Structure formats: structure tokens, C-alpha cells
Image (cartoon, rainbow, N blue to C red):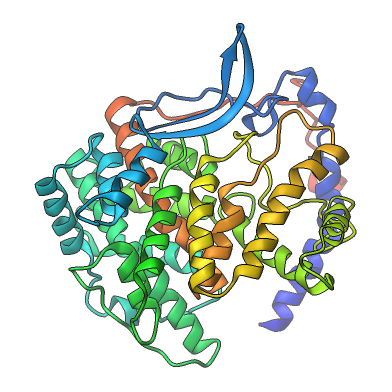
Length: 457
């Protein structure tokens, strides 16, 4: 088997030059044909591909008939994210936000107390896995990539659903609610299997408590002693709400729409979305932030020295530090310029958690980088819009303070974002009955090449 793999690897390596020669396209041709690379124009604006009532992102406003950058805004179903967060955090009932905002995104309205209780009950009754599923699926072939483990589990769950390919709206909603409910289990159990079989640690499976919120159950299932503080659970709950939805134009949500438009089933659609999200340019960005900050601390003699931090950040941009990619991770966003509202909301709670965890020095360093990086980037690069900290800048720090392993950072994003995917899948099914089929400009000539017999080549 090893010899076979080595042979194939050598073959692929030898053929790479030929592949590159015949597949490389001159970047100037994109401009010549008016093709927007990455479906974005030169200013970073996305190509309009659809309509949605689910969320709204604002990064610019009109001033004297001209669009100018403004503080970022994010609205879920017409409600400002700031108001939603303040609502569930200051409510006399002290309820958690994930279930309430999930209801809002799926159904378009905030639930009454009774509606929320019924919805929580429906999610709870959906949060079970088939008999022996953990043993036969999750524990088999475990690996460090938990996103792959989750994708495998989602596709396998289709085998247990006798209505897997039924795309009627009630059935799709049932499937989406079930997947929203079991995603934390798929992630945590997948990690525990990897941690046991690959890392040699103890293996334990804790079932979710029907009386707890999604955030509480995640921490309960993850930790050996099942214990957590109220602040820990509420900060995690906030993180889930902030990551839940972000317009129809992000990569994984667009993948959801495209796959749905093909008539595919819910399990295949969500598996495709997971595969899209796991890319380091999308859902894996917060891991890079944590790794970058660790490297920074390793190379600084004084974390409080602004000159040292400035020098390190400059080296990052010059490709002289960390991974030498020329990036300050966690800075900048495809849409926001002046500010990312999710990062703004997050920061205050990050500070509280840092105090509880005695990580004030880390928080001070993060704050310094947040303040210095935009100025350094602006001084070093010609940029078409402003740069600010995005939500990924703080989320990895939060997860590390919650003792969530890095292998679960991107799965945490998935646990939140499946809510948005589900809402967009329903909206696509309700409103559009056409497959999404974009056009590509071919560079081939209509004059076909003459075929030569194998013996003549």
C-alpha cells in the first residue's frame, strides 16, 4: 500500500508542470473580459446573485449621493444585532439567546414565551442520535479534522431517515431542526473519539440535558466533570448568536443556496456547506489568530511594549514573521471597513471572561494589536477601504479561555452557522425553482484541434 501511494505521489509530482502550463490563466484576461474574480469587483463588492429577507449587512451609507464607509451594522430579520443581544442578556427571564434567535431566523419573527418553550421542546426532542451511531460512525476512523468527521456523520444520518430525499417544506424544516440539535453532539463526540484513539486520553460520552441551553450542553458534553460557570455559558451563547448568520453572500451560505437549487437533499446540502466553511479563508480564520498571537508572545520580551508589538506586526506584513504570508490575521473583512459589529459586541464580554480566567495580560495584548494593526496596515498597504478587527480576532481567544481545543474552533462556527444555512435553504426552496448556473468565459478557440492517433503522439 505504501509503495502504491509513493508511485502515485511521484506521478502527480512529475505531471504538475504540465498541469500548470495548461491551466494557468493570465490575470489580465479577467479584466479584458470583465470577469469579476471571486465574484467580487475591484472594490470588494460581491456580484448580486439573489434576494433575501433573512439578514442585512451595512458597511456604507449615502452621503451627498456618494457611498461612504460607516460603522458596520448587522440585522437579523430586520432586528439590529445590538438590540437582539441586549434583549436576551437583560431579560428578567435570563434566558439564553441561541434558541430565541434560531427561532427568529427560521420563522422570521421573535417568539412569544410559549412559542419559545415549544420550540425548545421540539429541539430537545430532536437531539438524539440513532442507536449505536456514536460507536458505528463517529468512533470509526476518527481523525483530527473534526469538520470531516461531522460531514461524514451528517451524510450517514441520511441512511437513518426514510424521508431523506423528501424536499417538501415541513420535512426539510424537520431535518434542519434535527441537524441544528445534533451538531454539538457530532462535534464534541467526534473530538472525544479523536482525543481517545489518536491522543490516548480517556474517552467519555455525556448526553445533553433537555433542561439546558445549547451553550450549556456543549460545555457539559465537552468537559469531563460537566461543570461550567454561568459567565462561560453566556459568553459561548453570545458567540453562537454572533456567528449564526451573515448575509447570503458568504461562501458556505452561497454553497447552501447552490446545492439546494440543484434539488439535492438536506443532508447533502449541509455536508456541502460544512466542506465550504472548513476552508481557512472562511471558517478557519480564528485558529490563525490564536497561532499568530502565540508566535507573537514567543518573540516579544515585553508584551506591554508598544514598539515591540509594532515591530512584530510590521514584520508580519513584510512576510518576515509567523507563517510569512504577509497577513495580520483577524484584521479586515470582505464587507466591513470601519468596524465589525460582532467584534464590538464581543469585546466587552471577552474582557469579563479574561478577568474571570486571570488572562488580563492576554486581553491587553489583543487590545493593543486591535488598535495598532489598522494604522500599520494603512501605512504599509494601498487599500481600497478601511481595516478593523473582525469577529474572528476575538473568537479564538474566547474559545481558548473556555478550554475548547483548537480542533473544535471551526466546528463551533458550524454549530452556529447551520441556523443561517437552514434559513437560507428554506428561503431558496420557497422562492426559487431554478438551478443556480453561473457562466464562465471560455478561452478556447472554436477551431478544434485535430485528434492524432495514439500511435502518432
